[in-house]
Image (cartoon, rainbow, N blue to C red; front, side, top):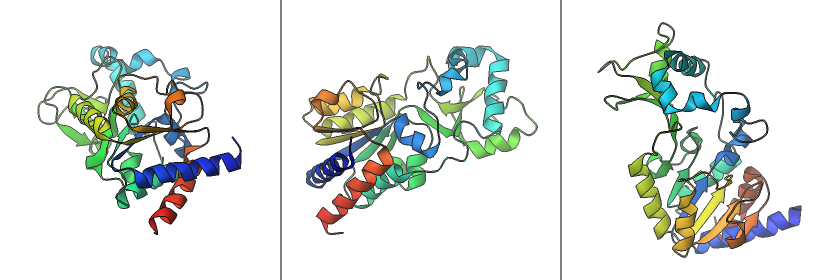
Length: 260
C-alpha cells in the first residue's frame, strides 16, 4: 500500500471516529510487535522457540519443573522485558483523552495500553496481564514485582495467604477466558457504532468474536493489520500498514477535524 493510500484511508478513519458515538478498539499481537514483543504464531514467533505444551494449564499444575521454568522466565524479565508503548498505543490513549473512546478490548498480556495512558477500567484484557500473578486456590492477585522479589530465594513461590499455587495471570491453553471481562467486552461490542481492529489476524477465538459482535450489531469495522483477516471483505476501511504509522496519521486528522 503506497503512502497516498495510507494517508487517504487514515483521513477516512478519522472521519469515522469523529462521527461515531461509541468507538471500541480491539488489539492483537500486531500492535505490540512494534514495541519489540514477538508475536506467537509468526515464522519467528514464540511458538517456534518454546514448547506450547508448557503453556497448558494442565502441565503447569502437574509438573513442578514446568512451574520452575515459568518462574525462571519471570525472574529474567519475561517475554515483555523492557517493552514500552509505541505510537499506536499512545494514539489509542489520546482517543480516550479526546472523549472518543469507549473501551479497548485486547488479546495482549503486556500492559502497554495502561502504560500509554489508557484508564485500566476501560481496558478489557481477554487473555490476562503478565504484570500480575494470581493464586489458583484463593484467587488473590499480586503485582509481579512482589513475586520477582521473592524469586531470589524461591524457585517456585506459593501464595503467602493460603500456600496455594501461584501462576502468572495470563490465560494458559486449557483455561477459560475471564468470564466477567469477556461479558463486558461483548456488551460494549454490541453497543458500539465503530470497531477499530489493530494488529489482529482475527483467528483466535473466542476473542475474535468481539469484532463480529460489533459488525452484527451494525457497527462500522476498520481493520489495520499486516496480513489478511477473515473480516477484510466487510470492513469499511482496510489498511495494510504498520499500526504506529497509521494511527499517528489517523490522530493528526482527528485533531484537525475536532479543532484540537
